[in-house]
Image (cartoon, rainbow, N blue to C red; front, top):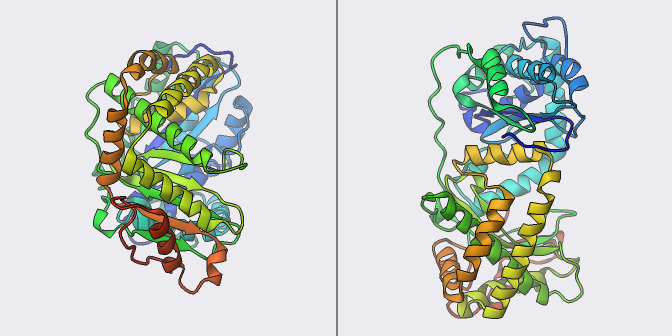
Length: 454
């Protein structure tokens, strides 16, 4: 993405498809994450005597960052911001990406050091990972985030180097890799550099078939769940995973879907604000995820409240009341008008601030769009389309949207707080709040079957 900017350099990102979901052979759990660490620490065939070859060569060319690599169920990513736009610097970093994608030696001392690092990292996250995994098992059963062990590092301590190298060879292949570059560059010049480093790359062994993505199992979604063993965690959330929409037929349709989502979240968050009293914003609201938990084309709508101690019942009541009220009486014209005005103002600010957005942030969003088969509209394009199209959005349109979303999926209510340890039956207590604050015909009012964390 050529982009004039005041940044001194550009952003480079390498996306490698196939994260935890590709760990399908015995003894591979957690190894995609371990390989991500080793890209920054293993010697390469071109520098066999040098640990941390990527860091030693690349760090002088790039700005330091809290992290430069991530791995999740679907992919690993590597991303840096350069200090300059010099062709020689970009060329050297692309060479490092190519070395990381093909030339790691997996020297034993580097592997052992990163085993320990990965295990420390995952041990720190383990309590939260377990709670989150149980939540996903209730709200999005069957999806990758559910079926893949949240800890996902059981084999890191003992996997042989041969096993690690075998997974590396299956994952790090040309057909799995995307290079994203954002900044003030000449596209033809960059294409020449990419061909120089990646044009002759051929994977070793047979090509890997696409990894099947487990689908959401709607019939197994639990009406409610809770986490009582969560010290320091407090929150209530009401979610629904509606039926996946058909792919957008045009850029305009994708933009309009995005604008509807933004409009709805602002209206609902404003409604929640009116119920909050003196609480500051940022502690509650609504969000919409696309591709949530690995669902292909999947979505998740969520109203949330990070309540204060002793307030779990009231927080849950506010969320239930809001969903049920909108489901029963729909949206009001005045709140729609206010949300339209606020959305236009927000889009105008985003357009004005766009030149200051970091290249690496745009590279991340561009990589997401490519991975999801979507477009990445410029802020100015969103603003122009919104000014023309939003005046045509009316109450019946938004009411139909809400009913379609909440009636096509199974809603879920969750509460997380250690205060539930003091209650004999948390599921019953949560169910009583839903009954009290629900309403006839509300998608949340059927008697919930207990689905506690166990």
